[in-house]
Amino acid sequence: MSKSAQLPDELRICLVAERFPIIGRSMMRGFLWPIARGLAKAGHQVTVISWDNPVGESELEQEGVKAYFVAGNNPRRIDQFPRRVQQKFHSLHKEKNFHIVHSLSHAAYRVAQEKKQLGVAVAYDVMATKMAELFALIGMSEDTVSSRLETGAKVAYRFLKSYFSRDRYILGDADGVFVNSPQQELALERYYLYPAMKTYKIPYGIEIGDFSPRQGSDQLRQKLGIPKSSKVAVTVSDMVEKQDVINILRAFQNVVVKKPSSHLIIVGDGPYFKDIEFEMLNLALGSHVKMVGSVPPYEIAEYIDLANVFINIGGRTSGYEPSLLEAMIQEKVIIGSEVSPISTIVEDGVDGFLIRPADVGALSHLLLNLFLENISSEPMGTNARKKILDIFDTKKMVQETLGAYENILTHSSWVRF
Image 1 (cartoon, rainbow, N blue to C red):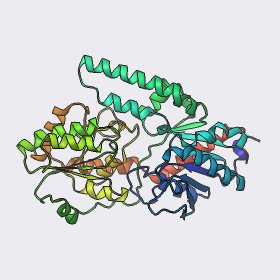
Image 2: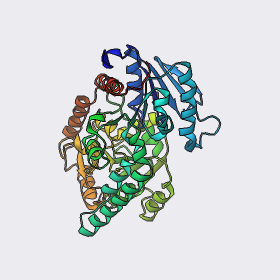
Image 3: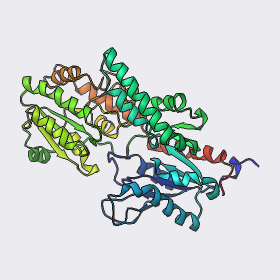
Image 4: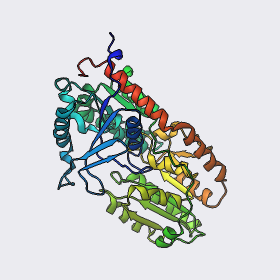
């Protein structure tokens, strides 16, 4: 009897993610909840091991998905997450053995190291590697020979350092890797030398159950002190890198000179918040820029709703940036990076705009023309929404994810059923 014929009707699946949003359309890992829920509805046992949650619970169960949160009383020590994952997994695995672990970061590496003793297969999301950092560096390259050479050297150094210090061990233990863009798939095979037959391309997006257009939030606009007549640009950043946001500020400075009523909203917090704030004040943009800091994931869509233009030119994620997808759903004009995965679904000038992140002049020119209404935004927003509806289908994502799990298990002879 073939291994595939022996797969049980009910798979026991363990998902590992630092953040597990159970509220749809949140901006980080927003695709995880609908997939987990879909797998549970298909008759499989789905367990999530995560770090913490806004309500401070150690366990939650919703729609057949059981989630465990292992931060305990010290949520700031997220560096302990891999060890806590290992401990929790051992405890749960003894009660009822899992068949497959799917980790969205490197956090399951301790489990992966002992997968054969445990009798479990382990798959990773490509974000478990440092690939996203390489995309971010490439995006900051300027269109000059010296800049390209400098960027090439930085990318090579960062790749070699991350590959030999961590990534090769992660990939060496991976029975499968999930990617969601052609760039990821190509880079994984060409540079990380990971077998194409063990790579699974699934276009993860965001929760796609509620696609009704949102109404403008007059209350939020009033709270921010932005007049109804003002044109607004919005960007979202975790501020782990700063150059992309600084480039947006510099481009916006030129816009304000010719369109003084313009406003920019920056959503997010992180290590470089103060540096970005200093640059904003140094450019004398204090009355035109609102740095609102960190907001709950479910509120980010409300800020995007205020935008005439949504900008995200960061490259730190090597997948599809959820905030850009949310903006496209809301029929906003989006400006993304031509070197990020979003360029594989956005046709420049048709359903959004793509620029090189380091090209401040191009961004400034584009923003000004949009704010002056020299470019018609309505058809572009309609096209953007249609594109997302055509590409991201929760039912299809669940089916493809399950198919990948079954293929991984078929080729993992040590898994105990």
